[in-house]
Length: 340
Image 1 (cartoon, helix red, strand yellow):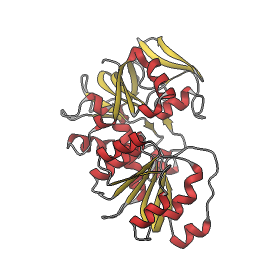
Image 2 (cartoon, one colour):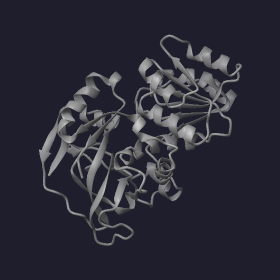
Image 3 (cartoon, rainbow, N blue to C red):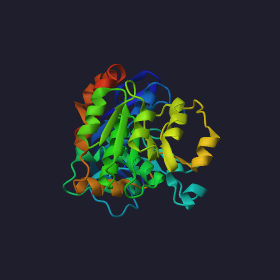
């Protein structure tokens, strides 16, 4: 069978490998669709400290169950499914308090073990979610990025009527926008420096947009809030140097959700944080958000097709990566069809 393998940084391609078997406690999934994520690109560029090469990447995927391993119950051959990539031990402190996405022995499908850019993959049955009949496999492949949005919003604890500022209108910023609207938030401002991305944000329901290159974000948000500040800020731009500005924009009792893995230090003005009693939360992966997102897709409150800018066959994986690398302004989500 075919698989997309990253052998070392900048050394990748489609290879022939033996098909895996369904291990005990696992199911074999024939992959239908998989999305290319920014973290896949980080692996390709050698910028992910957790990965060990060679690695078959891909953590956003959906397909059809082809075989069942020993001890698996509740799933059957031909079930249509998507896969939560977060594998946790169930025993460490984070797991014991209900935070398995930061398990001390965390493993992520597509990072620590082979992922969805192969025609068949064996995955833990506990990570497999059956799909309602009205959720297509192409939409289901994009459940995972929406769980990132659902996770950071839960960490920020929105209240009814809260205004939300989203920094960055890439894929994660747009998923935060969509999930926030699905959960009832209506006053949502999106800031980016690329007009096409801001156009996309408006088309998906942003009530306001700001081009950070041409407008003073801090002044705009102060005027919009009558000087009170913004209670919810989601940083999907992940630029450490912007953190002091976010702390100034935040209202007293505001919450700032951080999503970036950048190792560059951010300046933290303690006075700004303490006088406002700000809550600053990190958000990593997702904490059991797949059922919630699948229900939002099934109910029509989310439309994953709005994220997709390109759909390409598996054979054109190399061309897709070149496009993302060299023309990122043209790309939202690239969906790869593997054809299960």
